[in-house]
Length: 179
Image (spheres, rainbow, N blue to C red):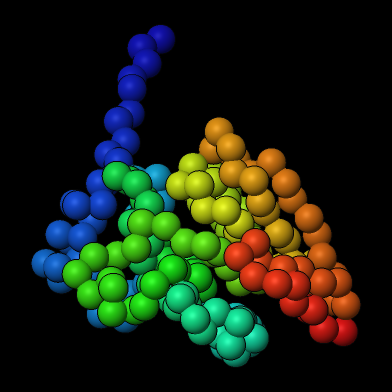
């Protein structure tokens, strides 16, 4: 029996950005490049959008000096990855990134309801980029997953926090998650 090899084209960030510039995607189309694959993001449900706003409101005051929160904006992490995390805490001022996307973050946060498995898979992309920590606000299990210590393409530490537990971003003092 004959077998065939199927080639997969892995897009580069440069190719992807050229497609964006050339209008290949519709203005309201939500896509991101992860490991050379262009993923179409599903429309946001109310809970997801509200959770992103809550994260902004909660973390915004803590990160006002020397950092900025980018909401669903690109991170240029590698030759083949330009994800758009729900929230990324970036060092510097937003004006610093007028001509290019940031290539790292102090903290990346994903809000997961229907996308939990995909958000967990993206942890490898963030770990390979040596993002110090990645949090997933997990609606399905009503918890916060905290990934830390990136090494060899994966996070070495994973903690599950529930309401009432405290967490502190590595670059800040402790924060209480509430009740």
